[in-house]
Length: 408
Length: 166
Image 1: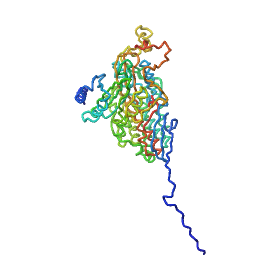
Image 2: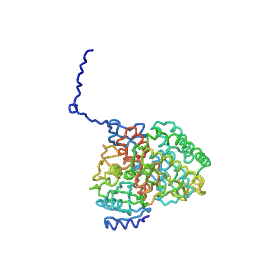
Image 3: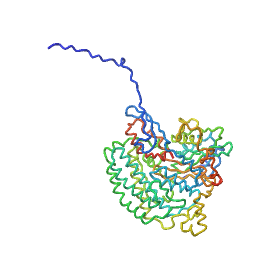
Image 4: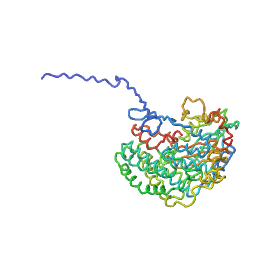
């Protein structure tokens, strides 16, 4: 056998290597990425699969609601509010009505308050259904989404029965509701109370203890309670971080103090906790709905405030005063007292505030919406820093950022 | 639970005549201060163990064009979760010198709220890390929420202010 001459390996030493150039990739997540569930953009700087920094660009569907509101009579502003968080429009509508009622000093009868609570809690359920089932979709579980969407459809049918619309509901009036709960509405609500728990339990079975789902969500996008407070988190996202702030409990409105419900809190503020808090909130909302429908007080469903609440139609045709009031209300010729009001309700995503300044005119002098999504979305780069892109998408999904509410 | 009276007295004791115009519209304690004192007032409320106003609810602006020397007002809403009271602080600033210090050092959430206020009213928050437009396009050269930009076409005669009760 011939000797094999082993050639020395020509390995260059470390100093001879050409210097590695670190380069970051810029990735545009949005504005029309399916994972954003709305139109907003994140410009992410990526180092391989890891996110180094991010910047959000928002305002793609900014519609200048605050400016438009300065030229609209109070009742016409309701249609602007339901275009903010369109997953839970009734909360926006009724929150706005309560704000104006506070300004006008109108006392709403108990029955109307209970109907409002009922509708707002149904709206919260639809809001959380969307958020949680879409989170499932983003982790790869499409079935649950299609399954619970059927239940949202049933809630939308209840909306239809109560106000005639489904998505942009324009529900309620200044001073009460536009009509009493019909027998069909009551039947549908009772059916929903019966048929929703098995579906929700099925969704829980699909996700709550699912190994894949847990691996994808636990410790993803965590935020500490201090940072969450500093960033102005409210609602389920703050509660997931461990602070039990809920407007319904702290500053009860619309008779929330009559109802018995628990405020679920999380521990780590990560995606899984946000999911679990929303999940539990649906059960609590269902509890409130059940109490409201069972203890629905008798009585009128609107306040005795003829200057603000539209008179019944048959009165308008027969009664001069009713006709005058009807005309004045529809033409927006209602002079509101001067004053400034801040009213907050617990929206689907947290504290939804209305800051209304009236100078005694027929339109607001200034109206500002405190939109929870807008305020907490600024924490997003901090929450997804260092995580992978697929985790960042779950973080965004679990924050439930609604583009309409983000931009107003 | 603290009453508005107690909070107001505490602030008066600490800041004297730098806090003024105490009101209580619809039960919400409202007061005014100067732009020199706004950050110390917020810091005092946040850190003092009797108040613990740890949550900044909202920042927004208002314009009163006829109020010479005080055309703009920046409004801060704060909330103490511990004692469950809300407080509204107003700072009036003149249009000629439209500056106010930023609150981003105290609350991270002030970042976008101040950007929004700047975007709509042109109020400059000194010391803000990234004061640029947020909802409108960056090329915009005016501040749309100011009252000099009416909503409707100015040539229209059917939408006069008198019809809106002003």
